[in-house]
Image (cartoon, rainbow, N blue to C red):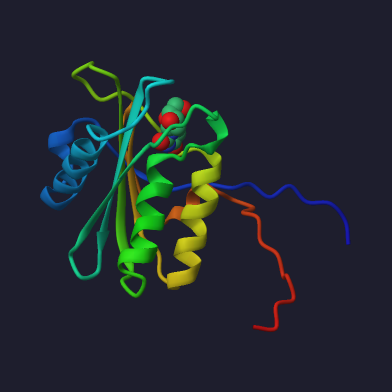
Length: 164
Ligand code: THU
């Protein structure tokens, strides 16, 4: 009964420079950077790359895929996650890295996962029943979260009553 005012806090690590990340994370970020070079983004000219490290040490890359019918395109994160879902359905994801860049510009720019990708990221975490780390670049530096769920409090969940 009654009213309360809970507050949410999200713990994360912040790395000012690329060199501050550990070697494994640097390599995964580098894989995301390589993936953004394959982006198909002629409409936004905003290239995004994502890379996943799986438990079997395989890397799965994704990049944004746009389409003239704009809503038909897909973000880099979901391209990577859905690819992993079909290529390695039984392999848990350990880490996800995301990097963005403007077409033909040499430097990374801040790029946080969008809301729709967060929803998908969280469901992959729920499906594998273990958290995975998420790394992306903000204006303050590289943010590293210990689990995707931290990016989406109050995630959509539903009991659809599926009987299997
Ligand atoms: N995009 C991503 O690939 N990931 C995100 O998290 C945000 C946005 C893509 C979609 C579109 O191709 C371009 O960036 C500009 O919005």
